Image 1 (cartoon, rainbow, N blue to C red):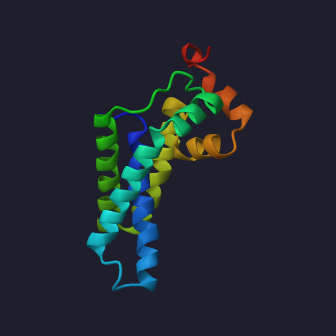
Image 2: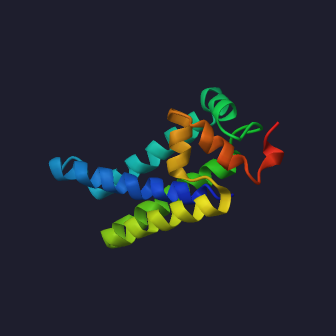
Length: 145
């Protein structure tokens, strides 16, 4: 249900809250909090659908060390959306500095734990860097064919 990437989904929730809060300053009556929360969940659900499509699955396989990636289970995708809800709530009810520190801790922690995080994931999907792929493969030789 949860995995190392659950932390990335919590970060998604924090970032969705931040972006939607900035947008709501321009349109305060158009985007009340309940709609911001719903938009965040819909954005994540949309990403989960895209992430589990052949387009993204094949991209992961071709540019990352995840050669055997087949997508997430439905249960894991639902849990990822729940993690976004948790991240959104953390950002909503915490001080900004706490959300920033949490993002840094999650990113550094996952970098040290699994040699991957949201930042590297985005880099490798958008503009892969061979040296990152090589570094990530250290200790994960079973994933490389």
